[in-house]
Amino acid sequence: MIGRIFTIAGKELRHVRRDPRVLMTIFAMPLIQLLLFSYALNFDIKNINTAVLDYDHTSASRRYIGSFTNSGYFKVTSYLKNPAAINKAIDSGAVKVVLTIPPGFSDRLAAGRTAGAQVLIDGTEPNTAVFARNYATAISQQFSRNLVLSVMSGRGIDDAATLSPLEIRSRLWYNPSARSVVFILPGLIVVIMTNIAVVQTALAVVREKAQGTIEQLIVSPVKSYELMIGKILPFIVMAMMDLVIVSAVGIFGFGVPLRGSLTLLLAGSLLFTIAALSMGLLVSVVSETMEAASQLSFFVSMLPAFILSGFIWPIENMPPALQFISRLFPARYFMEIVRGLFLKGVGLDILWPDFLALAIFAVVMIGLAAANLKERAG
Image 1 (cartoon, rainbow, N blue to C red):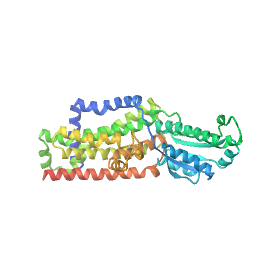
Image 2 (image 1 turned 30 degrees about the vertical axis):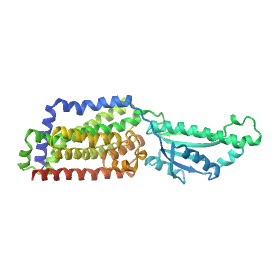
Image 3 (image 1 turned 90 degrees about the vertical axis):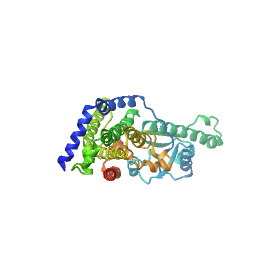
Image 4 (image 1 turned 180 degrees about the vertical axis):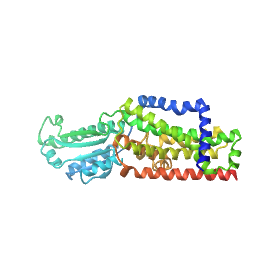
């Protein structure tokens, strides 16, 4: 079995080596995409998932929280009970912002003294972080202004409009400088590897159909799953090489930190590569022409990698139907793994659902591709 698989893999590798366009797409295009996206992309964001840690529990603190939710820019999704829950909430990606209101908040406001509040912001997405900080500052200033006019003016203070009883302090986690490249590069790894894994592999079997050699493979002793594995093996190697190249350029060229485990990154990348390659093979098996395979692979891989993975728009801001559809594509789970490892340094205790989803996806796709090839051979 091993010998037959490596024979098919060697045959596929010779096809790739003889086609300069494929080599250009696999090795040169990732670097071009990396440079273009890293320097040119800029994102905007709204509706930010927010957690609240309210030590005060007064009407004043509730009004302050309400000023955030009523703005439309923040959506309070959870209330935390202690500071230890902050790390877990942000590390898991459940929220992007944590609003902390200290004890004595209401008393200080009532006494006309400055009351502090803290906004902790997940800096792994710079645009979200920058907008969240600006929105929080503007909302707090408006809250202060309204409070001054309604309370302080009633006490006969003529220059009430110049007072600022509320002081907001914001802090960016994981990406303090809010550099876009720190957010973009991990997402680019997903997009680039998707391109290699799905689009290129989608041509693997359909190329045999176009050349009239698929019948020879079908009647040979090679089993359908051996053919599938042999077809994807060279692309696994090339995709992992691209991962190393892009990651090295990002880390050493752009200063993007890798805070998590390198072993987990390699394991997650390998799992995603197998899952994506299996999807490409399924596309190749069901397509009759290379043009159809190319178009279908772009539709089921590149578009979801850009739109449904969280690369451009946060998934939680999408309509529920699109959020459900995003779960059907491996790019979503790999995006969580790459950003979690590069930017947050989280471990398998946080990322295990994404690893499990990729493993299930890979098994299902390989099974479907082998079954379809066997059915068409029959």
